Amino acid sequence: NIDFKFPSEHSVCGHILDGEMQYYTFHPMRKRFVSVAFLLDATEGNPRNNHLQDVIDAFTVEFMKNKRKCEEKKQGLAGSFVNGGSGRGLEMINETTA
Image (cartoon, rainbow, N blue to C red; front, side, top):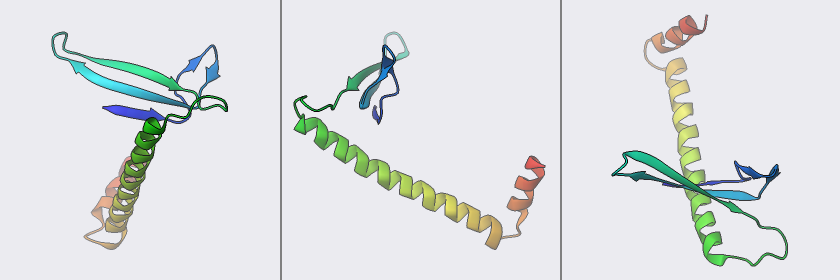
């Protein structure tokens, strides 16, 4: 799994960078997860990495599609509690939060 964070999740000497690319993998012999983070600095004067920009753009498109799906699913669930069925789902939520 590869994940991106903007701005970076980690810092160097208190300095948060423009981004962070995190790699996660499973080590089968040790039966443990391994993670590696690469900090990204996009300040003026640094060379542009067009390949990495393509990856970030593709990640952003997928992120936005998934975010939209989650929002639609939340809307659908909220609507089903209010408008559909017996309404028992909404009562159960109210009982647990009371």
